[in-house]
Image (cartoon, rainbow, N blue to C red; front, side, top):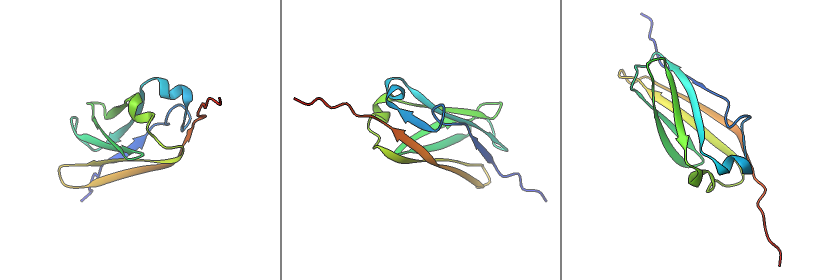
Length: 111
């Protein structure tokens, strides 16, 4: 018997796997696709300690919006992104990206 467990694909993050100061000025997205999972299923995303959810579309794609207020609270340096799903049978799939780097130049005014 073949067990069709969910498989997640995570698209490139933020146009090149890094956030820069310009990215913080507009809403960003984390997206991808999943196979062997019903439309309407939930995708759980964690970025730098913030939790988001996305819904699987009929074509298997999903997309989560990341508010600018959350992005602006992220610490400088390397960030972890995890994406996970679970089917009705309890089969889990999780993907990580550890290469996301927050590339910020903080402006400081010297008096």
